[in-house]
Length: 115
Length: 111
Image (cartoon, rainbow over all chains, first blue to last red; front, side):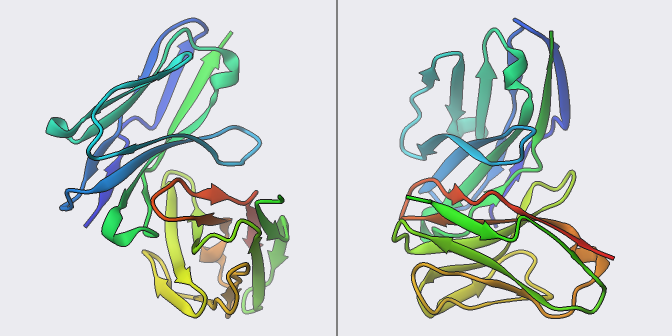
């Protein structure tokens, strides 16, 4: 069965600090997708990134970067030089290709960035 | 494009009442799903559909019904509301093999 674990329930940092959000997943499939979503205080879910299981290349988008390591079943998310606007709950999710619509989410990590 | 539209945004029900949460998407996506979000538990899948006329259960289906008569609409029915169903509900749609697009959520309180 597919499972996503985000062990960090809450993280608090001061502005300009770097922060890494951990995501560990379990799946028996070889083909799957991993996602990160952001949920700001307003409540909507904002898509950040999708990665398929055959693409282990790390990705950088501005201050955001993602480290995908199949060997450790991890898909970690780093925010460089954090800003107050990064304060949100961040969710990691997994979708097995043979079960496209069964996207499973982790419990989320609440990030607070203090000025 | 409106994307995924959920109604209502807020609802208070009494225990035992029934109601339907509406979800509509205008992106012609095959897949639609319903999640509930509870503190510390992330989003949990209630029911999902892979096309009109086809639905299946997710992780937490008890107490909920769904149907999918058209590609656009995927309503979620609470048959007899219970306080344990107090939650924020999200509807999502997605085409194959991409990210899900979420509605704005419905905050439901059962008293």
